[in-house]
Amino acid sequence: LDRYLRFVLMIPIYLMFRRFDFRLGREFALGALLACVLMMAQAIYQVEWQGHMSATGYYHKIVFGDLAVWWAGIAALFALTLTKNNLARLGMVALIGMALYASLLSQTRGAWLFVPLIPAVLLWASWPRLQLARRTLVGAVVVFLALTATMAMQSDRLRGGIERGVSELQAFEQNPAAPTSWGIRLNLWRNALLIFKESPLLGTGVGDFQRDMKRMVEDGRSLNPYVSKFGHAHSIYFDTLAKGGLLGLVSTVTVLLLIPFIVFVKAMRRAERPEEIFYATGGVLLIAAFATFGVSEGLWSRNPFVNTYVISLVIFLAGMVKADESADIL
Image (cartoon, rainbow, N blue to C red; front, top):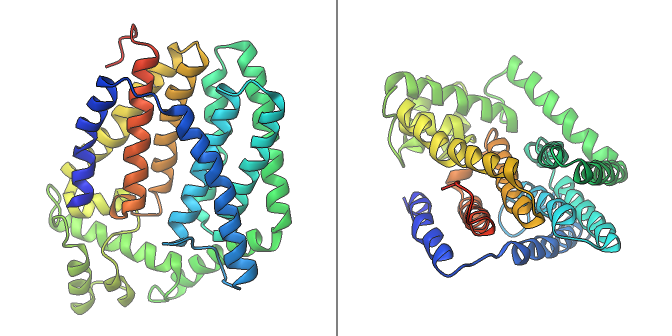
């Protein structure tokens, strides 16, 4: 429950930011740049020096890989909005490549789905402003070239991750009980739908998912026995559907993703100054990132994801409103 309480605490924290005129976007972006360097160093240390199969950071490989891509997105946004020095932008391209390389070493396949959305969102944000659009397009091309070069250095690792994913799906088709990454996920999603059929309106309740998985293994309804080890469905959508039913899914997606997305898009379309563009576009990137990461990971069940989302949302929302007090946004 403490994770859900953090979402509620966004309200007083946001009001505090508004009251004391906190605009921490630049500091937030500088922290992202530092994170790009440190995460790459940690990934190389764990994989190349310690001999681990993948980089896990201090907590979990999925958290590490997803957040590495997220910080790369913030670095790209910072380079194209609040940075005026071309040499500094070039350095940030290198930092973006470092973060993407760290994510690649983590072998977090779900994180890679967000990578093409970064230049797409940046180009969308700058399209109404022709001069900025040209600059954004060049930046997007450079980022993609950096990404291509990064992946080329570890082509075997990238190809191996994709091939493993395909083989795991084939193994699931032949034997749903196979203890593979995608096989367990698909079983968790199937079981979540079964729980939803039992309690379509309110779901099974917060904290009961693992107990239900054990029960489904015992009574033979689960095709895979390994699901009993998990307390979430490895997807914010299936997880919320099982725990909160249709009411929980609709309310969670609406409050945490849809409404903020609409607010940030509205601000992004009317933004003119670099600071306004930074905060509004950063909010759109945030929603796009977590909506994508959440397809294959239970973000709201892990504190590092919840903390990152809450802090990022407050910073972008408060900064966006303060950057344009005359705008009728909130």
